[in-house]
Amino acid sequence: MKRNFTTLFDKNYLPYALALYESLERHVPSYLIYCFCMDDESYEFMLNANRKNIVPISYNQLETHFSELLVAKKNRSRVEYYFTSTSAVCSYIFDNFPDLELLTYLDADLYFYSSPEPIFEELVNASVGIIAHKFNFFGKLFYEKYGKYNVGWISFKNDISARKCLEDWRMNCLSWCYDRLENGQYADQKYLDYWPEDYSGIHSISTLGANVAPWNVGRYNISFDFKTQLPKVNDQSLIFYHFASLKQLSEHEYTTSTCLYMTPLSNEIKDVIYLPFIDTVRKYNSELNLKVNVKNRADVIYMGLLKKMKNIYLRVSRVIFDDYIKVKL
Image 1 (spheres, rainbow, N blue to C red):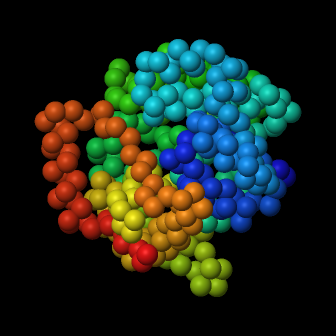
Image 2 (cartoon, helix red, strand yellow):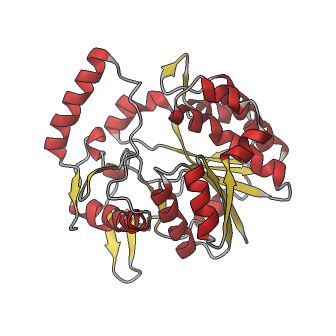
């Protein structure tokens, strides 16, 4: 069965999007990914790259279809605008490709290590598939207030309940979608907390190897199966990892940000999960003539004293948990 995905990115996330594409090529036999390119540079690259199974779509096409996005673009930051656009890209696909039965949104910084078919099997009777952060203790304590569910993977069936949920989400994000916690809202993410109560057919994905990430990897035993040559999570296949907050600090140094969740970067996590992905991203950095790919976003959650306290916490925790990776040039 052909799987249909969509994602969005700009030139800063282009190496990540290409890594995502490479992992889909390896693990999904039949698929299309609709790539929303949020600037001219990424769109031109995707058009000229002419890679199979990719449908490049320009931000201009998206904004022409949903002209109200242009209003939102004027009153929020770049990352807030991208948050606002997540629901719109899904709606655009259904509006322009109405025969699609199921569409899955993927964040561009996901990377597949094995087939996602176990997730789709779990969703066979669902209208909408969402996935919880599955925070470790410290993540739950400090970060769950920003949303129980993660926007990294969301599947929408082309049925009445899912389309109603998607349209409401799109309108909610147009109305309010900012990088701060306010009145029970946070970016495009906190809205998902209310979906299980408000819509029928909402299913929280429980497949173990789905959406392993810095905020939960410390809960699991990570290993490598030399027979299958695949990473394992508690003896189950790692399906995809979410490389949120991975930052390139220099040409040869990265920080994984696992320290934010008081998780030490074990040799298994580094060697089995991070290094293969970093090698892939570095390959595409080279293709794009990038030595350092900077994709940081402005920190507007923490201001003043809170920001100073956060910076002190980061420095101390990075010393304690050592989440740096140095690679050979």
